[in-house]
Amino acid sequence: MFRRIAFTALRKPSASMATSKSHSPMEDAMRRKITEALAPTSLEIHNDSHLHAHHKAMEGSVSKETHFRVNIISDAFKSKMQPARHRMVYALLKDEMAMEGGIHALQLKTRTVEEDERVKGN
Amino acid sequence: MAACSLIPVTSEDDFNSQTAALPPTCLAVIYFHAPWAEPCKQMNTILTTLASTYEITNPPRIAFFSLDAEELSEVSETYDVTQVPLVVLQRDGKVVDAVTGTDAAKVRGAVEKHAGSSTGGNKASLPPAQKVTRPAAEDTAADTNGTTHGAAAEEEENLDERLAQLVKAADVMLFMKGTPSAPQCGFSRQTVSILRQRKIKYGFFNILADDDVRQGLKKFSDWPTFPQIYVQGELIGGLDILKEELDNDPDFLKPFIQQPQAV
Image 1 (tube, each protein chain N blue to C red):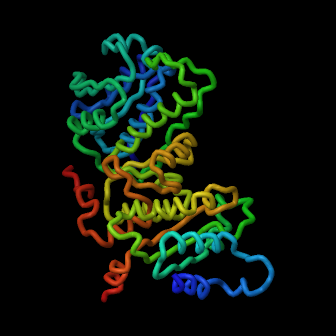
Image 2 (cartoon, rainbow over the protein chains, first blue to last red):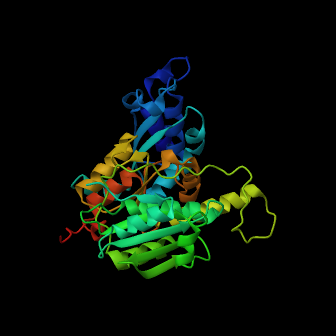
Image 3 (cartoon, each protein chain N blue to C red):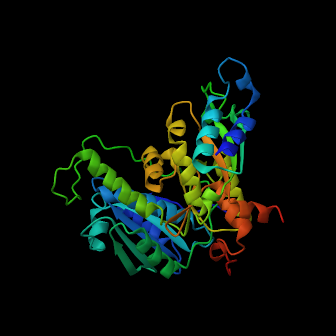
């Protein structure tokens, strides 16, 4: 239990040290929810919004948190097929994805500890 | 090579001259519809998609025609059309098969039986899929449901039925933003590129051209994003899962690779 809290604290962006509001509310919410629900051994969240900012679909958008690439390693995915795993993540982020100016695109890699080790060629 | 499209025929003369121009080996897929019949919208989409998976060849192997059964009443009489939608398959002037109702698999099965399976067409520059807007106060004459459980609920049921057929319109069905020749989204474009690279035969639907399908499919698939890939009526997932499966499983989608056609 303590270890999980420590893990979260270590990964939080340093912006939280200041007293001003976070500049990445979407990313923070994602990190918090995924960590709480899936207890991942590894969680990488990459914000790719800047790569899509000029695309037609993003015309008129002011958010800088629209496109994310997320890599999750967690044994919560064990014995679940890929669509089921992605759905778990979608369910967690349902509100963020549904809101106006929220998450527009989500690239997901969902692996168990064993699968990740296999892929890394161990 | 361009892909076949569903050709609307507007007069009896037009129908006669078009079919007369076909070589005797060519299969004519003749679709009778009526604008007031709800199920016809669905069949329209199914046939347009099916047509798109066949490449135009010279001489033509297959041709798809769409006829308003009421307007072309003489033609309807010739084919003894008593209900719509109806798909008649004809070769060398002789009827070889006929399919009623909106079962996409049944129509595809009949077409493949007589014409062989499709030659591809994923490079098609097709018209976007039919736009079906919510009808204002349309007379659902074809609807036999007598209960009054509200127009909205009924429409959703019809949409669900339509989607259930649409996802089976081809063995590999891609619901994307834009078309394979003009993708409107980077992820959709990557998906098309991967399928093309591996020579996988697939049908596609442009969800930007039909908002009902776009929103309905999110619920139907329980999947919030596009592109969506269906294989034999089952959702595989999006681009990420497609890539993952192809990387990990050498047999993934192998049965759907285009075999080179004999001339």
